[in-house]
Length: 149
Image 1 (cartoon, rainbow, N blue to C red):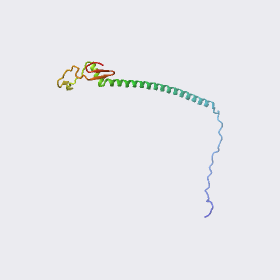
Image 2: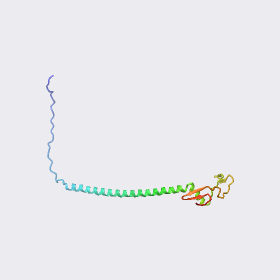
Image 3: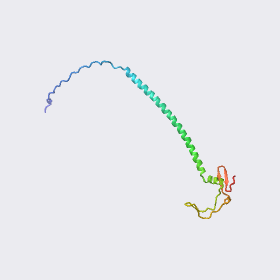
Image 4: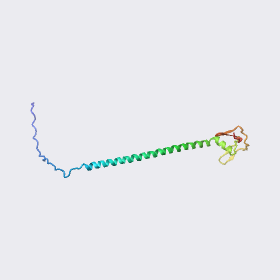
């Protein structure tokens, strides 16, 4: 083995086109219109951002106002629900019945709801059958006899 280099195949030479200079442009590019265009775009963007932030701030104030209204209305609803629950209570209904002249009857008889027939003998009450029965309504107490304390 020898340390000689192997012979190479000869390269084919190709003719490259010669480089030619391009002439100067007919008119130079002006930077003033470009800078004015960028300044205009920046101004339009700033005005747009100002209008957008003002609109969003006004809408935020409207939302806060509506939330306050909703809280007030929710409080009123809660108060009305409490009043309805108190009016539906047994004590309140009994006291209102006393005011209308109704008296509790300890002598109950069954009533068939399908046709409304009384199954048994109904007895009238005079109103003093349950003298210890009291109904509290607010700051007043109504006795079964109809006297207020």
